[in-house]
Image (cartoon, rainbow, N blue to C red; front, side):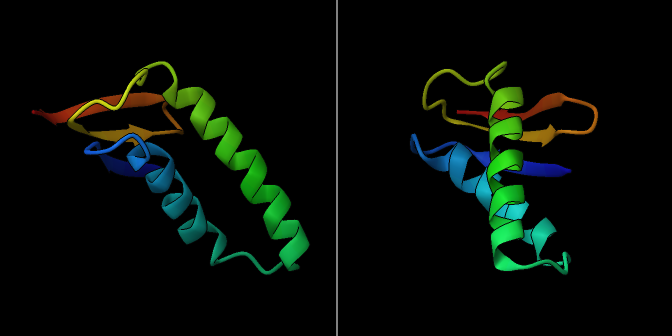
Length: 77
């Protein structure tokens, strides 16, 4: 999964993670309980990966690739 994060407030990263996972889960044909469990597991995994690059509320735009486990800075400000 690839998604972009534009950091302008402390909640930007978690909001972008949630949005990206929601988009992926729209394609899944499971019960709402199963989707909730999958969502929770995926959010934890992605946050764990992102902790390598994010510590505070940075003001940058990055692209995160969870399959390759990379984070590319697109711009800083």
